[in-house]
Length: 311
Image (tube, rainbow, N blue to C red; front, side, top):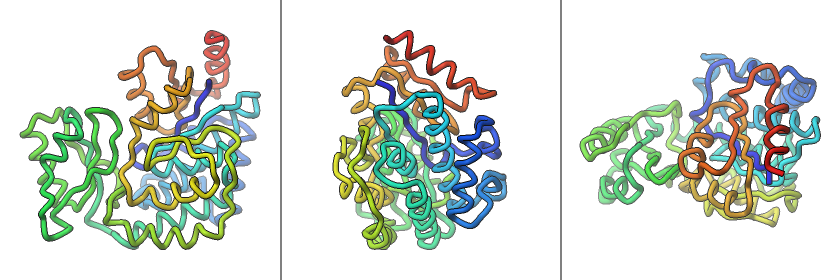
């Protein structure tokens, strides 16, 4: 079974949209996004533009949908889709649950709400080398000031945990994690405290907005963020999209769910290879390809070859 997985905020690098395959499916996707949002999407991947969560989140959705469409143009259709954080949106488009234009407008509002709630002074840190329970043990649950507390945001792998909070809280936590044995405690290129209760109010506003957006029964398997399980109803996918900003993402569990359901080849949409590295370490018998590793539109050739080899 071929699965497409889509990265979240933090994977972006300057110019990543311009490194997508030179193909009509990609060009038309970028053009459609620009027309839908009345802005030049091709300009959202500059170093300056990527300082904004709005530009980052829109760009990631466009890149994910563009790759899915490029593969489909060559007859390569994924049977399952899952996305980390904002990557859930191209996953929902890919499985046929939501229209691309509706996903774009929803993501734009999502990012704007997040930035408006926390315009500066907050973000995420990746803690490597500690288990989730060890990370939780370092968190002070009794901190009276919310700005002094950190929250588990993503469980990307058994020993790769992402925490959210204020800059000061994250800096202090990184020091505690390092002293406790973490191999690395590093700030991510994310300027909002994603996937924790600090964004509950913003999530409620997005839920209200999403109520009027058509979300259909998926045509292919969709694995959600919040509970890392298959979602079969449109209303459940709508809830997953609207609320994942204020709940921890169980990404390793989502990847595991795909593999337990028969995934034999995973393709990670651009940019980066976060999920590729996780799968290679935890499930070495499963084939996984990072689309961003292939230049000159060679991804199609490699996917076709891997699919033939797996038959």
